[in-house]
Length: 266
Image (tube, one colour):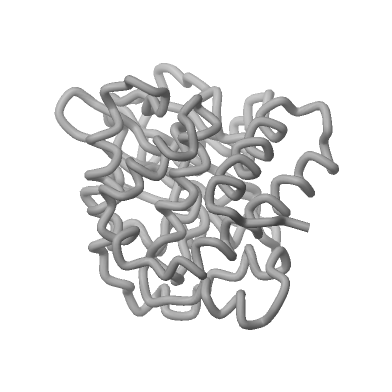
């Protein structure tokens, strides 16, 4: 959002923040109504808020609230939350990190691989048992293909350089807005496509994927089906908004990766 949420919003979170000193909006976070680092009487917090309206966006922030205690310390801790008829607000630990560098020759990639392996070791908590990953289903061609995306791993399911933050001594996975339960390779596959979009060849990207334990155990048929589904997903995203360069880049990256794997996409 571009405007201040208003005095009633700040009054609602005041018990958690005290008097607010400074609000620094983040560049990312377009899917939220507010994302900001808030300096205040009680410290600094990363504040994420959405209007309390039924639907996907509210469901997403509630899911992020529910999963946080199960994904620490991989993710910054949720320190407080507030909800009323108008807003759902989460107050996270404010960490000092930058978006990760996926480009060839970047020094962040070993740490990113380590983080993906740590995500892959997380247990699926009871709260996530019914969060079956289905977002790629409609881009598959058969029910048999969709079954290849099923599994019993906790997925971040939005792996990209902006959600993997690098600090001086650690890395974090942030924005757990839609975690799911599915095949373990999916997070690594998303990483692979973003590597290609960042300038890697598909062969180089898969060489980094090979360092992830979830990739070692992946069924090649499942990865191929997912590669094809990813091409179709990004093709549709480009058709919806053809003037967004990042969508075109992801579509081209997905096509290059699928071609590398010998996958024909129709």
